[in-house]
Image (cartoon, rainbow, N blue to C red; front, side):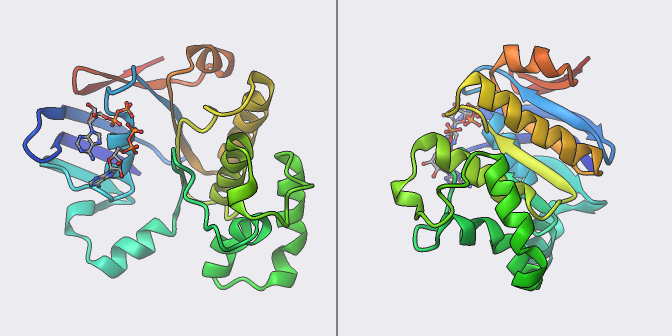
Length: 219
Ligand code: ADP
Ligand code: ADP
């Protein structure tokens, strides 16, 4: 599913953020990506989402070396991934409901097929009364929940989330985590970057621990 081999990454002329990352994950796994702020969690997710190329080494995703993918293949591969960006990246000119249904539209599904699913999911994440609102008027926590709903609606093969509970209270954080667990039960591989060790303890999943530019699997 995912294989990092001797991966290093540095931005421009800076120091190496990742030095020598080696690990592999099987389909259907559930991992937290842990480490202090600045350890390289977002960087590792960007490598997986192919927003960055490794400076050295290889990242394999779905059996392919991501550095060799042509733009169309990269776009196709990305459609198999649901991602929650730290800065949400909702489209401001679409309502919350339209934002969440976008991945399904991109997959060519028809509105009558997914209307009820989108509405149900929005209610589940507590946005039942915000479906027609545009992102600029949503609070940080509401945007975060919308971004999560958009990432999970299409039941992707891989779900990447960058600090997905950073803007919500602990109770909502647990509720959102349960959504990821449920998705994982349906077969999605999940990687959640967080520095919330309390949340990680509560859910007890193994973690990819980032330290000094390398990754150790813990638990
Ligand atoms: P984390 O997500 O664990 O907080 P990041 O991956 O965001 O860590 O950052 C790791 C290091 O890389 C930090 O020192 C950060 O300043 C640096 N960094 C992140 N993005 C960039 C960038 N676009 N250009 C230069 N340095 C960056
Ligand atoms: P952090 O995890 O520290 O919040 P961000 O995701 O905010 O990191 O990224 C830090 C900065 O790096 C942002 O200004 C972002 O736009 C920029 N950045 C992110 N990815 C890239 C990239 N692939 N190339 C260049 N700059 C990037």
